[in-house]
Length: 207
Image (cartoon, rainbow, N blue to C red; front, side, top):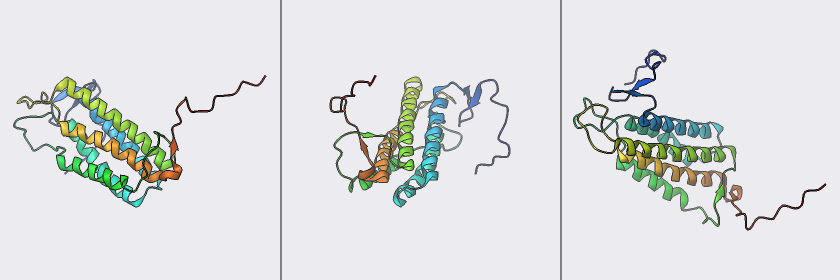
């Protein structure tokens, strides 16, 4: 059970913070960057929900996803250790399988794409595009974290690697968010990309 009695602690004023295993690290640690960007992605999803206008099924999915994104952040904040003091919160394959099933569920009734889609549509649909791009950024941050810390289990607090399933979750979620934009905007509300070679050339500037 989480019990927050005071929000400010002053413990990070020297540029240090603590990971979920209570090990100390710099705020510039790539782990902190990774789970911070996950938090940012989750906040952008919350804006899409707050705007309203989402299909009911998409809203149901996002309710669970917003909780699971906290799980992803906790996972990235917890280095892999051989004998942790308490069981860490980890993303498991079943969560990824559920995202893939939801991708299929929402995709089945949608028409095939004839071109890439420009971000836009309804306010909530456009916001889901923002969430999609930030989710991609959080995945890139997580991969940088993998490059820095690896994926191996360690016996020393703070030294363990990254759970790759947490990174995979972000990849699948960004795919799902794209499909959600289509389900939200509908085919009539989609703005398709017209490549430069196909666009009408601008006319001469009038004097």
